[in-house]
Image (cartoon, rainbow, N blue to C red; front, side):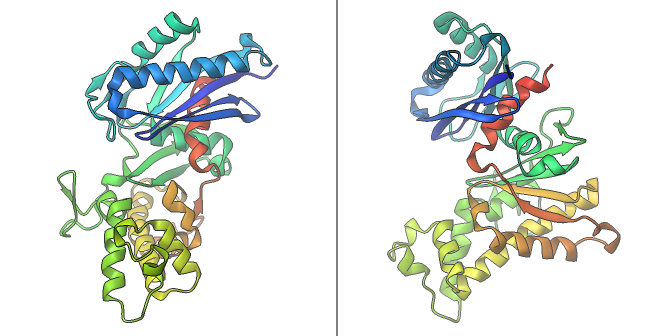
Length: 329
């Protein structure tokens, strides 16, 4: 019987959890609202209950003796040795939480699941999911970039996560690409996240469309409710040939490519896997990113450069969190 584990992706709006086979990948999965306003105790109760339900149902058909634990990808600074999560964004009321101890206490006490809990940052978990099950399988070394509300990342070297001595390696969202620009995010000027995180991307799109010399269909797609404008509207318009929307994606891809060029220059990483909700734009985003990546690096660095879309979508974190359990052996 194949080994199996439970992988959990803890987000500000949803908890995604899955039973994952070591060779089969996701066997079954569930998504429940995070109910973040309940605070750390309420959210941890929910996570433990969700994991317990999955374990009980899976152990009917899967061998409990082959169960390898629970992996959890969480937003924010994760100290894997201490088992803590510090100041996660989008989780009100959380400061420094002893996540592993609190979760194990609930599992052991309420559900009788005696297992190890493995923690990592959510972007690292997504990167590891792509490394083991997705688009990164072909690349010994790559950078995973997640584009969504924020911009996250994870570094894989020789098929293993590289976390750095303090666990914060791969925070590509805080790379500076415009040190003198007007964008300010978390007190830092000109970062990737401050330029192409979802809200900033939409702000940029509104400005570019208003200033564009040709009419745009984007307004009609969002019902002329510009407050509801989303990357999906911009994607649809660009695919229909809307020049203003296409220029927005070219700008976003160019900013991304500029950041990736610094990674190539510093670490000789030449493979980039792009995930997160904004990556759904596909070549509208990836082609200009690769073009600027090539323009912004030396010719001697061009061999093997590629920017590809992640395979696993919003399931990468669950895959990767479970894979943490298997890699611990």
